Length: 187
Image: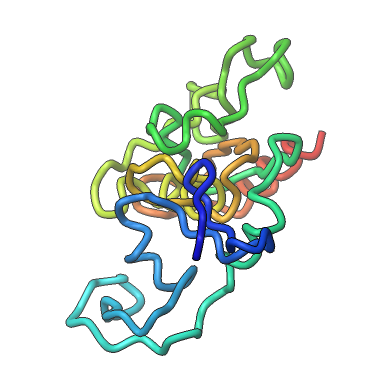
């Protein structure tokens, strides 16, 4: 018999069991827990969704087992170099980096870096169609707060996401912008 503490599952004997978050769309995260459910087909390179195909039970990244050990740490900062991140997104906001003192010439309270133009200190993902922005989607995979009962669970429920926008909303970018972005992050 399993007992639930804070929505996390453990066996009655006290040994940890697979951690299954209560997020409403977690069942669709087949890469994290593949039970053989239907998986949307996809046609590259446009990433168009096609008719679903059957999943293969157990062919996943075993996150539910990893979460028995840890769900992450806010001390780990992950730079997300992409189209930016919607840092106001309810599943991401708690894990978004906030500039503590004016690092990198950006004001205290800024949430990352934009190497594409005049809004240097605003990495907001402005593509709100499809995945609600590719960078936002990627940030969600990395670090959406899990076990909140809403939407999805990221690989790390607790982390610090540093948004860096170097790609435009169409996913286009110049290599020199990527180099600038990487230099800014590691400086």
